[in-house]
Length: 323
Image (cartoon, rainbow, N blue to C red; front, side, top):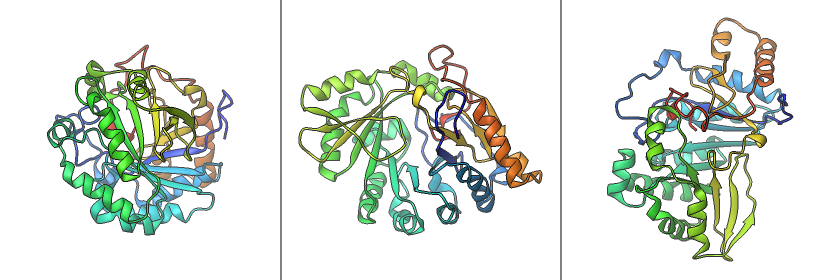
């Protein structure tokens, strides 16, 4: 699939739930209660059918997201069904790792190939303040993922001025010690939480310079479909990535679309245009009709987000689509 700007779309991010067991300040405000009801969630077989429509059009990388995907009871079944689809080359998952201690081996056996783990602080009190979660459980989950054989494991840290940016070097040391990949991410003004997080926004050029003051950063590449710019740290095995949706947007190379838990196809994280594929599916649409709607949607994919021009335009929380 190609959009009107010549970008090849081969990456689908699938939200299996908009709920989460954490309340990260930039993602899911503690006051938020407007979740989709479980009867609106696409069932595992429905999700697999919609994803099959995409793989039939050339999508080969699927990432399962949330909210927190591990709060979805049928997650292992969803993984198995998607992993069995022809054309899937990469089935990855984003998680906060709080439940990986229980599910890491099952996810590996079901077909998940790679993990991205959110970790915004190494200090238990700061972590609790930012996420509402238990850092010890996350650390146990990371160890369980390593023991299950996941590699690489990418750690995602949203860098926020005055909250956790002072931990950048400590996070590098942690990832060096554990054999993990590290990615710094700029906060995005998506939903009420993301808009409040802009008070702590910092361009990642500042973090990059701090690391350059300590290490030699050599440009490199890593397997994956994401927009990170990667660097090798000194002569180590550590790769550090920078994801800069605000200061250096990467819209010109965007290769992805997003499916919400109720089957709405979002064409851009920073726009509200969508295609109601779930509604079509439950209304009796054929596979060819689903694919025609997907292609029509891709033809309308915006050229770029409006984070800078309209930072308060996106009302849904980040948890609705998993970033």
